[in-house]
Length: 306
Image 1 (spheres, rainbow, N blue to C red):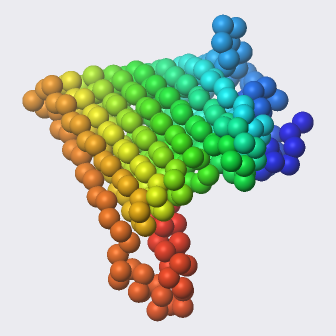
Image 2 (image 1 turned 180 degrees about the vertical axis):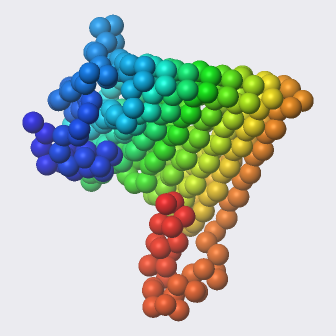
């Protein structure tokens, strides 16, 4: 049974206040705490390493899988390998994410390696949230690796969020798209203190009329550092777009590194980046409504990251 700290982490990363409906695998401090399968979704423990296989049958519609992870033991470090096999003509939602509570002196770290094999004409909504808390000197470290392999006509929509409490993260995402496949990524990120966050996205558009849209919105406060790298490789007639919008505050450091690689005359690839401080007129407008400068900043940041 999870304690109060673990339940709070679960609510933060997966919006769960009780056991979810549908399939789920809940992991706490390196151990599977609860699991449920359905007629269409099976979850199987790996035998050669830590992790699970999630198998979703062809034609599965309007079902969900929750696989959140929480760590509340200081000094715990783990790497978990989860593979998702999504059949053809599916429409499913997958909710992952990790929350770390560290009140000790040792670093706590969770590295999740997720691979998605998406069948023809399937639609997948994937939500991954990271969150950290605790007043210990030990760091809260999260290094997720995501690989996506999409077959013809598939559609994947990914929401990647990290808003609070993670001291160090390197997020690596790679995708390969077949004919007519689409990948949408929305990243929301906020760092403060001396936190460091690196996001690396590489999308290969291999099939005709495949497309991707990778959008990152971030806020860097205090002396934190963010690095955003987006590489889109167009190997045929395709469309690719990457966008990085960042608000920089205090003594923070933000880097945006675009890479567009067109290997076909009909590959249409675009990259946009904007880094800057909060506009003074926005602050003034909100302050005339009775907000303090700090309250106005918080309102602007909240709306920006929504």
